[in-house]
Each structure stands twice: as C-alpha cells, then as structure tokens.
Amino acid sequence: MPRGISRGRSGADSAWHFYFQRGQTTSRMKRAFLFAFLILILVALSACGPGNHAPNETEPATRLVTDVWGRAVELPADVETIVTLGPGATRIATYLNVVDRIVGAEAQTAQWNVLMDFNPIVHEQFGALPIVGQGGGSGENNAYVEALILAAPDVILAAFSAEAAEELQAQTNIPVVAVRYISTGLANETFFAATRVFGEVVGEQERAEEVLAFIEQLRADLNSRTAHIPDEEKLRVYAGAITFAGQRGFGGTYSNFGPLAVINAHNVANTTLEPGFYEVDFEQILVWDPDVIFLDPGNMSLVNAEYEINPTFFQSLRAVQQGRVYAMPAFNFSATNVTYALMNAYFAGTILFPEEFADIDITAKSAEILTFFLGADTRSAMAEGGLFFGRITIGD
Image (cartoon, rainbow, N blue to C red; front, side, top):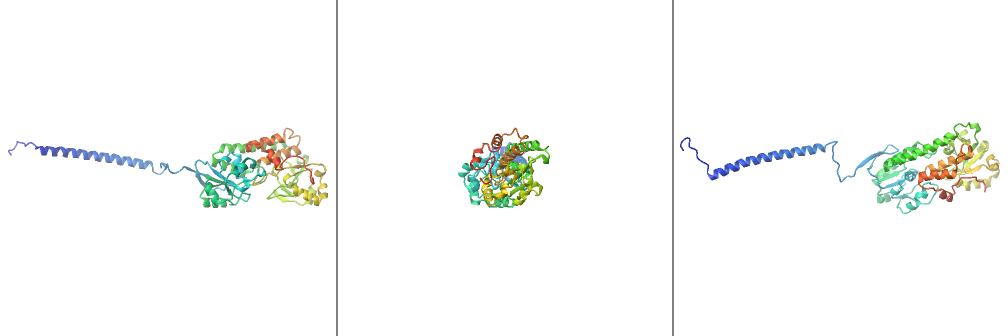
C-alpha cells in the first residue's frame, strides 16, 4: 500500500480492538476491587487481634472471683443458680436474701432444726429440693457428686477447706468458691471476708455491706454502753453448758466468750484460761463462785443429770442460791448464728448492766435483729425449739 494511505479497520478488527480495550479496563477494575477487598480483610483481622478480640457469641461471658483461700475461680458473669455446702454457707445466703437461687440442699439443712437460725426460713423450700450433700461442720468434702452434677448450679459456694473445694470442683466440673469462716466471737474478720466473697459471686455486694455495717453498728453500741465501767464494779459471770462440737454439761465454757466479751463483762473464765473452749472441773467453778450464771437451755438435760448426782455442788454456788441463773441459747451450730449471738449479748447486758441497758426490751430487740438478717421474726420457732431468754432453775 502506498505511503500516507491508511487502511481502515475491518469490522472484525474494530470488534477485536473494542474488546481488547474493554478487557484491559475490566482487568484493572478487578485488580482494584481485589486490592480493596484485601485491605478490608486486613483491617478486620487487626481489629480482632490481641486486646481487640471480638467475643464469640456462642461462648458465655465469665469472670474471676478470689475466694477466702485466695483461689481464683472462673464463673459465669451472671450467676442465676447456686448450691451452698458446709458450715455457714446457707446462713450467708439467707442473710443476703438469695435462697431462692439455691437448687440443691444438704440433708442437715433440709430437716427442721432451729439451732441453725436460718432453718425456719428455708427448711420447707429445701425439703422439696434434691439432696446434694450431707452437711455438718467438718469443712471437708461430703457432697454427693452425682446429685450436684444433675442439679447443675452455676456455682457451688462451699464452706470447705481449700483442698476440699479443689477436689469438689475437679469432681463436678462446676466452679466451687470457698466461703468458710471461723466460729468465734460474734462475727470475726473471717465472717466478713466470706460474706463479701459470697456477695461478689451472687452480685449482692450492696446487701453484703449492709449486713456487715449492721453488725458493726450493734457491736459498737454494745461496747460503748459498758466500756467505761471498771472490772471491780462488774458482776462476775460464768457461761456454762456451752455447745461445742456437740452438747456439753455444766463445765463446758469459753474464755473470751463472744456475747460477754462484746459487752466487756467480767467473765470468770478469762481470769485463768487462755481464749478458747474448755471442760472445766467443778472445783474450779467453786473457786470462781460467780455472781451470775448463763446456761444453754438446750443442754439442761445434761446439767440436770449432773445435779441429781451432785446437788451439793450446785447448791454451794452463790448464783444458784440467789436465783441468778439465766438461759443463753446456743449460737454456734454449723458455724456462728450471728443473730443469736447478738441477741445473747443484749440479753446478758440487761442482766449484768441493768442501768446501761435500761432502754433495751429484749423481745423487741430480738425481733429487730432476726427480721433484719432473716427477713422474718422467728422467735416463735426458737421457743418451739427450746431457745428462750429468762431465768432457769437447775434441777427443775
């Protein structure tokens, strides 16, 4: 073809040129789209990296709680069902108003026994629940593992030793939080720690603090009434037939006895004994010869049997001669009944320091204490179970 003359594209050439150009454009668009898509994936992956991991909606949220033994226990963020085991755990549940969450009961707490202050509140409910443990005050693992697994609580709150709590958690694969406290005094620091742990587990921290603040308020009131009185102006008092790991006769006593210590009473056992429980010889009690005697009415069958054997001993005591022997219901049964302990302290105050406690009506004060802790006035149940305040006669 001569130079300068161009040949026009044929129809086929024109079509090929069009699709070639279009193909190049489409390819560029695909590459651009692919690049943008890769950028989005990288952004999403970086958002889900360490510290930014999106929770798996199929996995329930959890949290860590440290129990009274320092064990870190992972449990559900929201605890809806619980089981309480061991001495004192059900008591704290009652004080915190969460017994409705309990889905299994111990054999001991499912039976009527007013020696546990919470029992009149829960025993009917517990009678309809599966029995998941033996109960008692040992602090060891006496739970029924298969029954616990079937009950399937979110958490087990156990007043167990650390080893027993670990064992039970391994056996059931259910979180076990230890809430054990020691039964001394009215409510010592171990009770405070256990109550706070319990409150954290069930989401009732505010109620837990209310309970502890109320105890502190009453202790301060009890102490302030008598702190100024010299020992030589106080009546000398003996607390006998005190329940400790079972029933005890007249010689069962405590040095540094909680209800007496909080009102600064002159407990004769403090003069010769280190703090703790003792079985004291009758000869020692004759030496002490207290002005006032308090006895656990639940153990009077043992005391009266001792009276039949040796009436001369009892008749030789000043307090017996003057009719100054009074009931003081047991407050340690499956750990400390804080209600009964506080009631005992106020009653002892009215007997030992009548002027300083002149404003206290023990009936009204008992109703106030029981209602605050348990949500109900259970004095009628106490009376039915032989727990009362008043004068008693040894040998009657």
